[in-house]
Length: 438
Ligand SMILES: Cc1ncc(COP(=O)(O)O)c(C=O)c1O
Image 1 (cartoon, rainbow, N blue to C red):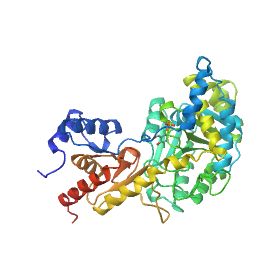
Image 2 (image 1 turned 90 degrees about the vertical axis):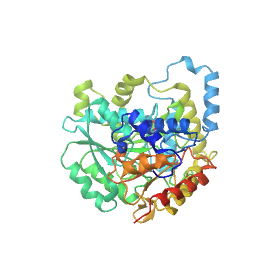
Image 3 (image 1 turned 180 degrees about the horizontal axis):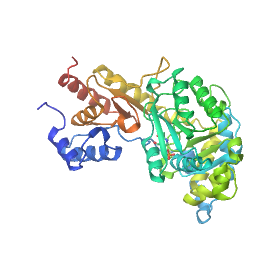
């Protein structure tokens, strides 16, 4: 038995207790529960990197606006199903200010987080044409989105973009689209879990192929402008957040309050439907609902059925945050840049002790430092590494759960505290001693 900060039998027994046969498939909640238990029993603090939850205070601009709205009595009233007019207008301005794309306020629809935005989008996209019954994931991705499709009984296909960056993306994407069964393509940018950022040339390929094959693009911007290699936070000034919106006209941009504004608890986001898509009629929608366009079905049928709108006060918060950002009074990225600093320090420690970054570049440029990063260790599978690191009081999730075909882990920077760098350094030094690289 090696000498490790957490006694190995404690982790092994807890894993058995949870009846996890293959640790590479353990979910975020399971990893969290095992880490919490091991921490409580051993008294040794864990360096927790499994959860993708904001670790910062909520945007003060949002909190203030929300309190005021509540004091003004809006809690008793159902929100307008189309969304608060002020929020719709500011979301449209936000897209102009930070992406430099024109999208009407009409298509900017509040949702209870991007989670609901993707659920409603998947559902609507799947109903447009009978023959298009499958969603395509450009993975790695956010596991819950596949669960959403499982819940609604819809099909999906997926590929790991690791080997298909740049020029290789076109043929790979086309091999799926030409079959004619894909209704929509989804990816996140910056990407959860790998923090790769698709470049303009890649977004152009996605956009052009989507147009050619009449497919809708769902662009998940949960980490809006959080590619800290560039200064994306100046409204109406380049550089802008890259987007497929420049290359096709059938898309939904999923903007979330959760990470960029640390507003996850209030469950607020905006799903922004392009003008063309909003007004497009589809045979499947006409047959099912007797009429309507993509936009009206999305709002008046799907969202109405799901939750009859989005928390009234949270819409005031989101409107205020977007407005302040649009007017240049609030640089929301300043508040979240700390994630990038944490990533830089953590990556450096891991790399010092023999770990490598799994997804390490964007067409030759090193990936940005941000909310997540991915690590591997020579000769270890995802499952082995995830379990082994638990013995050292470090918890992270295996890439297997994200649709990645690479061996490694996703580490999240959001819960790291300042005193933990020294702790990590000490523990990874021991790890390296116990696992000499051949
Ligand atoms: C890629 C991605 N999309 C969507 C979400 C969920 O966002 P929201 O809190 O707005 O539902 C997350 C949260 O972790 C995410 O990582």
